[in-house]
View (cartoon, helix red, strand yellow):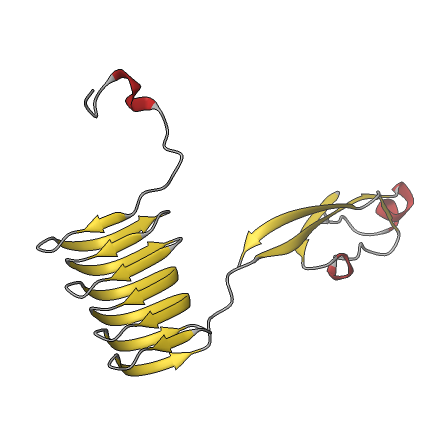
Length: 182
């Protein structure tokens, strides 16, 4: 049976490692949910949810975002990872953001290190809606008002809500929670 048989729609139980072979040149943006091994050359941005390995013949120029990075080839650029290992034949030039960096004897690093930036967490935001109705006594005693009968505002907390004008009747307040990426 070939790879294009009728059973090709069956999903894999294991995730495979993506391989950029020696002699292959890739430019642009790569996004992977599996591991990747680079034996060729990549220029651009790489987003890997697992491990990125730059082998002895591999070269990367650009930005790396990964869980774990192992460099035994050449990397030039900015790297954001939970763990970074520079092996004996690894050459790194640029900026590294991590809390776990190891450099084997013979490995070279020329650049700047920073603590890992915290991962973006959704910010909880409250939307407060205040519904107000003006009383007939208040509306006849004052000049015509341009105040709407329903006021809606976005506030960080319920305490930040807009207060209705004096003499206005206020309906119960509704608070809705939304997740907003910061």
